[in-house]
Amino acid sequence: MPLNVGDIISFERTFTIRDVELFTEISGDEGVHHRTPDDQGRLVIQGLLTATLPTKVGGDHNVLARNMNFEFLRPVYTGDTIICEVKIEKYEAQANNRTAIIASFVCENQNEKEVLKGEFSGVIL
Image 1 (cartoon, rainbow, N blue to C red):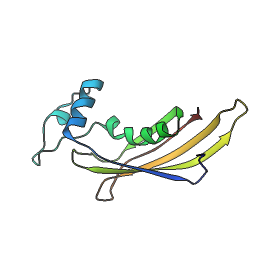
Image 2: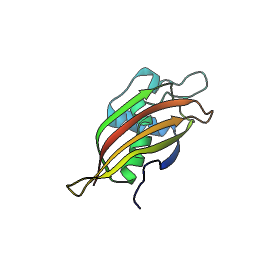
Image 3: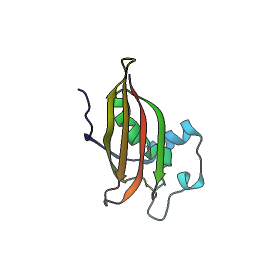
Image 4: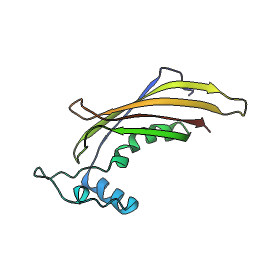
């Protein structure tokens, strides 16, 4: 199904301690704040783990990203549910049988506080 300028695609995920452990193993990002629970028993999620939300939406639509910009606004903790809304800003056929795409995104936690925003651009394969 083709995308259109103005379309908004949403994705939601609740992060777990296991998610942080797996991402730590894969990325090597072993900051103390990712391994030591706070006074509520939560771990801080790695920023790039949070950034998998808009990249998941891109992957669902076969986007080969060329540029990605992230602005991390506040921490995300295990147990947080993050809702990511990706808005299609540009979707345009190119001469090489590819489609150029530019999208912006905003991710909010369950308290409707922005935790991450940014944009990506690339082509649809």
